[in-house]
Length: 611
Image 1 (cartoon, rainbow, N blue to C red):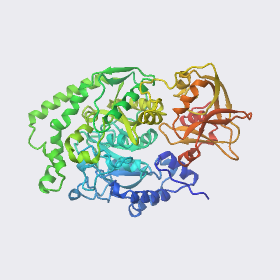
Image 2 (image 1 turned 120 degrees about the vertical axis):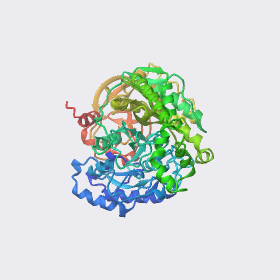
Image 3 (image 1 turned 180 degrees about the horizontal axis):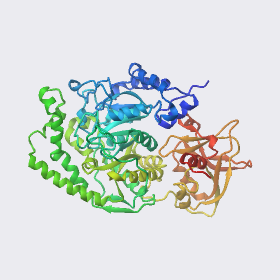
Image 4 (image 1 turned 135 degrees about the vertical axis):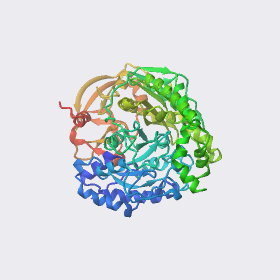
């Protein structure tokens, strides 16, 4: 029997498919996670690392659960070490503070009931105070792609655990951006639900009125799966509120700042170029774009650390810090102590009244609208943060600090590369009751980002194909035509159909491949199909044939992201045409959907549509 190779990054869907097929067991996956965590030990990802002793009871528990009724059955996840896992120490990255809870945090309990497997407790900026991932006595958490760079905080270990394939998803927390900045720096999706949507009972407070639990995952689908389990009112949580599961819906407007955001750090120019590219992609998704004054968001952000909310952090930690002198890192204590005596009750009420005006202004601005900002305006090396810890951390919160103060929801999504192994990310914001709007935009924008990695690499190397101001994939015209077979997102009715139209292509016919192919669902964001020709056996797969100007084909092909490409596709009648094919290595991390007969039928089946 061929051994199943576990991909470098785990996804919920892929794991579930392997379990159903009998190709893998949860024990196999856990053993590989333990191996990976040991190999990455110097990256300081974990405080309580994965071990069979810790995980075995949860593996045994799976025997009592029905996989068909457990949406996270056998899915490994990581827990930020300020969120309680029963009988495992919670440290908040401060050894002297550590305690061992008898009960799970409410969110953890819900995930366990759905069949998820906790694999360990992750490193964080101490007491969740920081956005850099370097403020921990357990070591600086290294970036998943470039170890000399920061990983982002405070949920540093949680993000890197997912990016390094040591969990399929992870829990973080977010007060000022801790569930979003690490996502951007490690090329992940970071979902920050509305305040109160997920219970915070069992979470060590950072700034209790603003804290929320968040999730990191490799794609949007996995984030939504976790949200569906974790979301819900809890009577014993004072901050909990009724916010139903969101349904994607298009906003009436997409908001962008009038002035180009300011960028910082050693890659400021690369980040700005990446932002310009994403803005142009945003204009292609079919929703009106409006440029607005975003001053209210900056004004609200300033209140978080330059106003009395820092006193809320001191209120939560005062007794411990004063009873245990020297137990906290100097930079952490400096920040928290700044709230000790600086603010009076009068100043607190003054700030609350000011914030209420900001909230009203933001709510009106975001009515049926979504705001897009960079998740971070840059990044730093770990050495640079050590040299200037306060200012560098403040920069990282420039586009995140406002969010919870203004009672907004947010989703951070990858948006290509700014440079080699340097991800760029954007965040979508809307009002608390409008989570469905950010989901719709995230899904549409993810389609538009297809091929952006190749564009980024071309721009970095200075080749002539780089053009961040281009709003269409192809502009060339020619009288010569070529037939092209499509099997996925470029077909009629799918989001990338407009790219075919933009280059002058026309639909010719629906047909099938020869009975020699396998169709795979690739674990990308968004998911897309991969067509692989087999040496023997296989099936006929439905596809469309279009006619495209020959002059457009070269540039069109150059924009296709690996593992896809253009090759020869054999049709049912034995003829060959150019068309989308997939490299064989992608099969290792993909889900076999050949039995569906084609991408359109598969998507209809998944959405419950009948034809």
